[in-house]
Image (cartoon, rainbow, N blue to C red; front, side):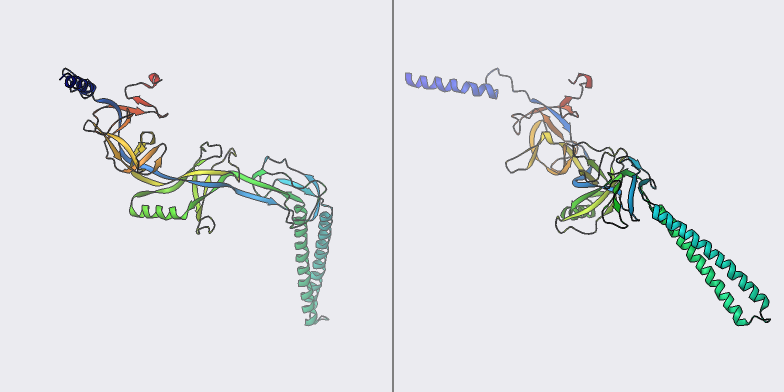
Length: 389
């Protein structure tokens, strides 16, 4: 009998903590609902964008080569400085070109004298025809005059060419841009139409960027636009990210799209153009670009409040009828630091963003409206920015 009483006392002591947790003990107050911070889900149009790799290319770039054969006598520009179209860069020895010009000028003078003589002969033949001058003599005089005029035109053309070739002894920039380092020096012999360049001139503003889009994703985007899931943008713009991770101030605008798929990379090339007044982007730089192709309807859910279940599906806590509910959601991409949720949530539902530690499905909760600041910190709506520290 005494042993039974001892066992009963032990069972009673073991049940006391359970009664205290469930509020089942006499005089115990029921457990209060847990306070949780919530934000309101809002259905909205969200930019649909993809990140693409790219490489900067010059808007214009000219390789400077000589058009005349000669020895370089002077370098007339300062490398790395802006240069305008037509500005001199190199001076070649012009002795031979000047001699050719003088010879051409002399040939023009001789041809003009020949025209004068033949004109006089023709005039005399026309006056004396029938009186010592036959019709055949007149025709001959007229033909010689025409030949003299043709000879003058040929000499004048040779003079024009001599003047042009003299101008070619001064090598100028064909475009506005930034001058590159000289690849030759004073005393070097250069030849007309040589393959080696003397220097380069590069125009940096604007700058162009070649971006590469996988062909499979391009087909997917087209299907989504045709189905109406994406409202296509009227103009394709791209936000550039530099190699150091900073966002470039000017957006790029699409200027050309490729018409074939690369057989080695499986991508289609798109070219964008952006302002580059300070030359921050240089040709050859590798960049990333966020391409906004249109807008999609969805709910922005901060990535920090989501988790994944054992099956790998995205989940979020929702306050529903005073209780916590863990909901599976479907995201279609992301925008900034939020998932773009297209299934699993409804407009106006309360998303639990704070107080989810050890939260269980079905637990009673007391929603408290909060906000998430730009640093991802949960704040009360009543808290002023100056007091948020």
